[in-house]
Length: 381
Image 1 (cartoon, helix red, strand yellow):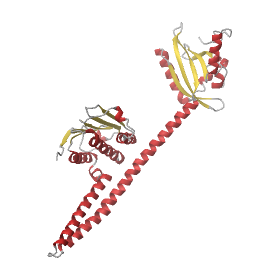
Image 2 (cartoon, rainbow, N blue to C red; image 1 turned 90 degrees about the horizontal axis):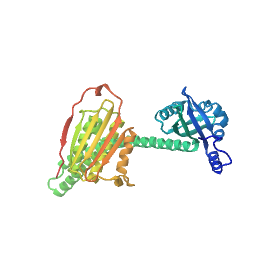
Image 3 (cartoon, helix red, strand yellow; image 1 turned 45 degrees about the vertical axis):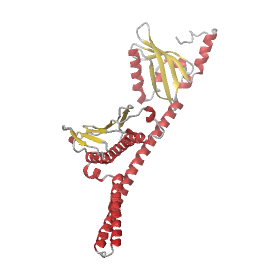
Image 4 (cartoon, one colour; image 1 turned 45 degrees about the horizontal axis):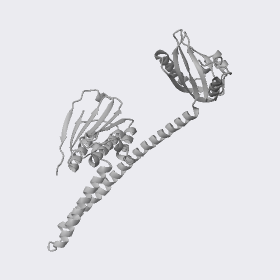
C-alpha cells in the first residue's frame, strides 16, 4: 500500500522508494471505488501539485479536484475504462486531457493495477503521468500524415484531370488532323501518275505511317483516359481492359460481376479502373500466371473488387522491397477512396488483391442481382 505512513523515513529502501516516486513526471496514487460509484484517493504523491496544480492532501480530501479538470469529451472514456477495470479486475489504462484553473491543457495517462478489498470493491495502485509533450508530438505526426494524405489525393485528382485534358487534345485535335492528312493523302494517291511506281510506293508508305500514327494516337488517348469508361461505365471498361490484357499476355481472364452496370462517382470509377490496370500490370510483370479470376460486387452500401491469379506468388520480403511501387500505388489509390486493401500471397500459390470500400446506399442497389460470368480466353499466339 502506497502511503506516507507505510514508508518510514528511517528505512533506506523506503527512502529510495520515496525518492523514486518524487522524481516521477506525475503522481503515484491509490484509487478506491466507493459504494455509490464515486472514487476516492486514499494516497497521492507530492507530484500531484505539479500535475494538477493541487496538493496531495487536497486531492485526498476531495477527489473531484481531478475529475472536474478532465475535458468533457474525455470524461466518458474515463468512466468506461474505470467500469471495465472494476468489473473484470483488469489493468486500468486511460489517457485524456485535463484543463487546469489557469487554462493550461495537459494530456495525462493513467495506468493502475486493481485488487479486491475486503469490502469486495476494487482498489487501484498506479500512476498518473504527464504525457503532454509526447502526445502533442503524436498529434503533430498524425496531422502531417493527414496533410500528406490530402496532398496525395489532390495530386491523384490533378493527374486524372490532366490526363483527361491531354487525352481529349490527342483524340480531338491530333486525331482530327491525322484523319484529315489521311483523306488528303488518299486523294493525292489516286491522282499520282500511273507510270511512276516509285512515287506511288512512297506515297503508300507515307499512308501506312499515317495509319500507324493514328493507331498510336488512339492507344495514347486510351492509356491516358479510356473513353469507354466514360461512355459505357465501369463494368464495360473492366471487361474491355481484361480482353486487351488477355490478347497482349496470353493469360486467360474470367470476370464475375454482380450486375451489368455499376454506377459510381467519377472519382471512384477512374480510381478503381487505375487500380485494376496496376494489378494486371503487376501480374504481367511478376506473376507468370496462366489464369486470372476477377470478381466485382456492388452491395447496397459497399463495393468489392477481387483479382486473383495462379502465378508464382511472393513472400513478405518481396512485399517490403524499397522499390515495390506497384503495391504501394494500389494502397495509396485505395486510401484515396477511403477503402481498404488486402493483398495476400504465398510463394507458389498465386496472389489475391481484395479491395473494399463503402458507398452510400441507393434505391437502385436495393434489389437483388444475379451473378454472370464471362470467360475471356487468353490469346496464345
